[in-house]
Length: 206
Image 1: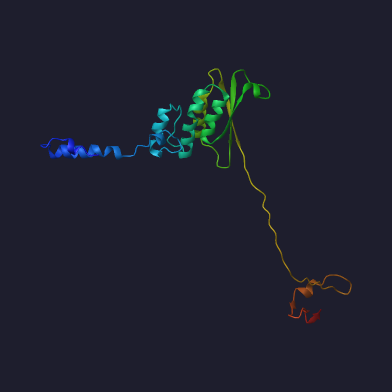
Image 2: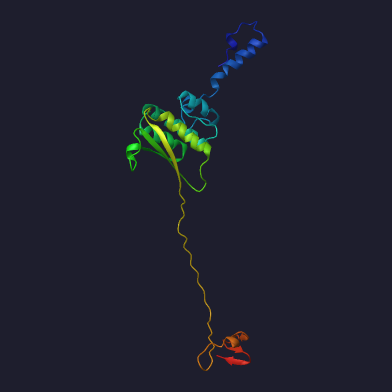
């Protein structure tokens, strides 16, 4: 609703224009619920949503899916920070096959209060920057007493079986000498006829 009728009769043109502009502000949609929803928030505003939720690690090189997943997991990670569950959830948001193997789960057991970082990648591999990123995420969510011992990277290749079949039809002709040996010299100069007969070196065979 315009405030024009509330203005005095001697209102200037600027006051009238300002009143009309302010009156339309209420018509501008402000989807507050969507702004705080990691699935619906516009992509350009995701960094601000991550800041609002105190996300520990943020990388502008992440894909949009990784950013949204990290934001969605932020509350859980903060509630359970210092536990192996929080570490797994934080790593899962990055999309890497990463696991933390604590010292008492190693065979043989590792040094007390240490852990190994196990990374499973496909044929594409993993860059040094990705490894640093994973280490930073683990460092910000793990308990303070645990220290990294080593990073182990394994490459897994997946391929499904290939099933194929071939169907064919034809005629096989075997020419033998009188002693039973193959007549290769005859076949090398032979000609097949349309009636199924075969001529080799002037000799006709059925």
